Length: 537
Image (cartoon, rainbow, N blue to C red; front, side, top):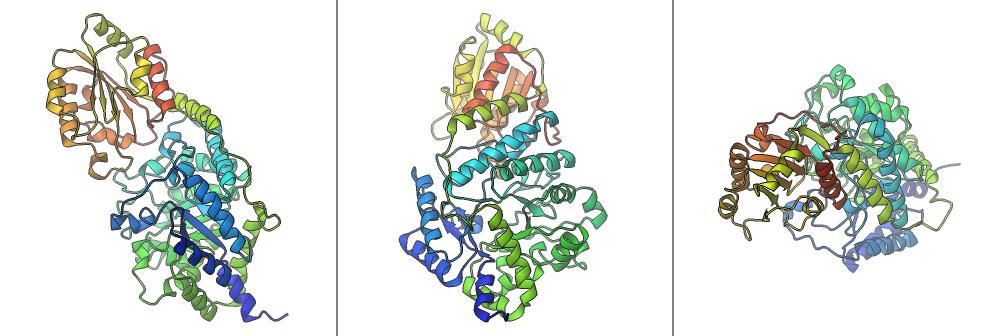
């Protein structure tokens, strides 16, 4: 049978996964419906709003939060599926759950927190993958663009950091595979990213092109290791990162997303991968500004070996460019992979695209178990004993940084360990010099640092005044510091080695705060370990 242009065109439409937004206007929604109907597109990638998606945050548009976003996404998915000639594969970035994109939905710990778990607790990572999968299915989403297989071996990485399981290649590989298995067992597709490895970079690929200078041998020994393990375990898809690896690309600084030697030669031929290959978002500046002609970027990404063009911004022009340049054989290869993925999640044979409901209680119980097994003791000098002794002499105080004194950590401590409490919330409502003066007469201070941001820009948004206050207190008092946040914050705190106690807690979730309080009162063992190497000042 001759393949007509029309059937080829319908097949090519399947490669396109444009971005859609929960908080879009009716006009935008109708435009997406038209794209779906006219071009038979294969899927959609959901973001919260245009202001927060990929590089769009540069516009500094205010992100509007809605309490009904979860219902909105469910309703939109139903609408978009109704418009689709072929059922859509709905995807989202939900590395730590739907909460990464949608308010008031279950949130799970960051990968770096999971990386603090002992190897023998990897079943908890499986459970995270499984629960996230169930949450996605409840919303009508079949494809999670997670987890990261990146080994975070560069502390100055502006974009990976807390999103990676850490810097131990075996642990990164094992935990990524557990997460994938959890999702797969409930019928949700997973995705390892960002091939060939975004961990050892110091450029944010949303904004510029990171360059990896490693040789193939070096990459095989480290960066590629988790991807190879994923391939051995039949990972559904692999996302290609916007990063250049000249040693794999005839010495050229071409993004891996647009590199045939990296996708076709290395990933397909040398590593033997025949699953779905998806590009990183094609609106990211490292690639989006390369081509003036609409559709050219989409063709180059397809020609390099990507099956799915994520966040493609020029759908009609991209389809035409691929039709004009690609062979029917190549089109069929990608089309068949996409259909196989759709078949796996059952959307081709059923019209009911959502199943189940969000289970916040199960999430909370799982988060508590992770908190109990990830909490990490870095400096320990019988802190509990010290605190109770100081309390007797009225020499104990508590200081909360970036949260008020009503936090769960303090409330848990107060069941047995009452003392004066002080808080710094922000420079507008709190005065650092007053706090410093108020603490002068105390000898022992329990400090809870709720790190304002997970990303390292601007010292994680910790004010210089607070770093100075911490430095002063660490040098003049017996300080017991509990850090609720990214462990990469530790090296920026001056004189941290002088702390009487230092406990890394990773998340500020209620369950993590409560567990930290119980751990302090009982002086119980901490079985977590830092997933990254850190040098304290």
